[in-house]
Length: 379
Image (cartoon, rainbow, N blue to C red; front, top):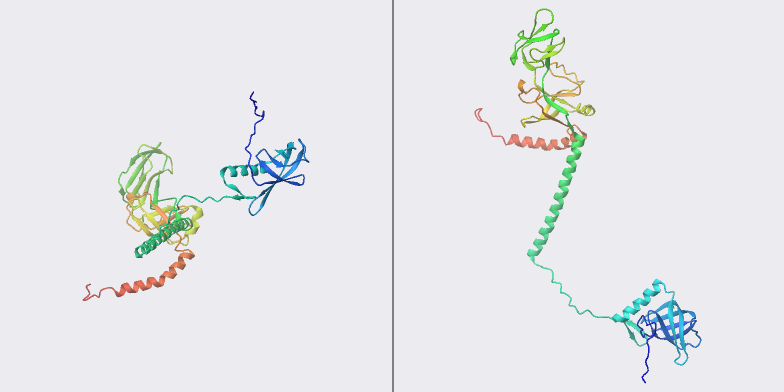
């Protein structure tokens, strides 16, 4: 009758390996017959008892060093006939488990092999062919191309640096040395013609230009005859504030006049906190509505400056400028753009002007020498 062998109730969970490993158990060195991730077996074990917890030290010999792994193990069995004792690992920490796992994986992958009584790490030569690196190009054209690329890169860096410098300088210059008027327009000194009485406006002169003594308007009071108001000068009518038939009170400005010989100028309203910086400035830049630009328009009057001229319009925080072009009375009130440049009067500007003065003098001398001679008074 054939015998039937049943498998163990608990199957082995890990494969066993045979490596030249020694185990020191309770201070006695034994030869390890085989080992796995779950435990190990040694030859001879007469002094050991099943169930006993022992301190084991696995000594794994490599070519140039020994790897010692200290851990706890429990005696599973002791076979007196075969002189064999089996142990199972207990209370493995993460580091101990990692070492045993590495050894197991290295054996399966062939990374470590047995060489006599020691373990060696196998060296597997790569089968892939390395690509040969082509030699660097040479020759005159290659050198020229290399220098050209370097020169182009240097020029690009310098261009970017220059553009950044110009941008920063423009912003700093605008913040430190430029003063812009809040509002500016074409203006002249205006004569305000007021109502002499309370009443209703009857007649208004529509002529653009009026002569001295010419009737301009009539005001009819509630009681009495109409009052005629005459022109106090040879003037241009700038604005008629009221229309015929409107009711006015005494002192109301009805007509604004400008003398025909009054200078037409540019008035610029400047912020009070920046007005003080303009007392050392002589010129300004004006941009008119038609696109005309005047780079050096002379400053005629500043608040508090007594220049003896009474024919200029004056107001608080307002700077009066010479327009440097012909302006008609029809342009009265036209907006303009006014900018004051403080750089020329700053210390840096004066220093740069002094440095450039010799070169300007030399250029002027060369221009005089190159002028053609005049014969008989006619060029």
